[in-house]
Image (cartoon, rainbow, N blue to C red; front, side, top):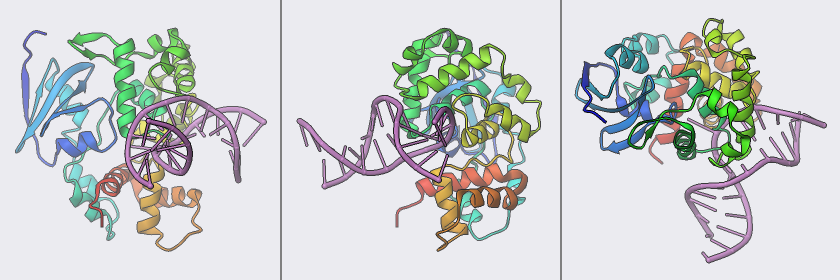
Length: 280
DNA sequence: TGGCAGGGGTTGA
DNA sequence: TCAACCCCTGCC
C-alpha cells in the first residue's frame, strides 16, 4: 500500500476506546495500548487518540471521519436531556466520551443478524471471516465488508463455512431480499423510525432487538433502545429492584416512556457499564 | 482430556 | 408461548 496521509482532528468529549469497544461495532481490532485498526467509509484505517486529538491514517476525508465518529454531535447536551436519576451519571462517568457511531447500514445489518446468541469476540471473528472470504483486498490482509449482492449470489453453505451456524440461512436470505429490492436500506433512511423498524424487521433474521441496533448504530435514530439480555439485566437491577414479576414487555414500555429521544445513549452507557464495571 | 452448560435472538408452529 | 437452531468458550 502506498503511504497514506494522516488526519488529525481536535476532539473534545470524545474517547476512542469505549467508542470502539462498547459492542456497537465489530470491524475494529486493537493494535496497541491506544491504537486500533478498522474501517471508515469503506477504507482501511488506523486510529489513535492522544489528549485532545484524534488521528486517523488512511485514505479518508476529514468529513468522513467526523461523520463516522459523530464528532460534531453535541454529546453533553444530549446526555443532559436524559432523566436525572441516580443511575445514569454513574454510567456516564464510567466511560466519558463514548459516542454512538454512524456505521454503514448493510454491514451493521449483517453483523447484528450474526450476533444472536454470540459473544462479541465471536461476532468479530465472523466479520473477519466474511471479509476474507468475500471481500476485496484494499491493503495487505485488509478486506472490505462484502456487499449484499455478493453474499446473495453465493450459497448459504459458503456462509456456514464462516462459522455462522444457523445464522447463515438468515444472512443469505436477507441478502437476497435486499438484492431483489424487497427492502431498500437507502429508503429506510428516509422513513420515520417506527416505520423504518417495521421495514427492517421484514428482513430474515432481524427481530425487534436487531432492528433497534441497526436504527441506532447505522441510522442515528437515537431514540432506538435495543434490549438484549444485558440491558434487560441492568434495567431490572436499577429500575425494578426486588420486583421479580416485571415482564420483558413492561421493560420495553418503561424504556420507551422513561428515557426519551436520546434513549439510545442511555442504553449504550448502561450496557457498557454493566458489562465492564468492577466486580464486587 | 472430555463432557457440559450457556451465550448480546429469531423463527415458526 | 416455546422449542429449535449452530458452535464456540469457559469451567469442572
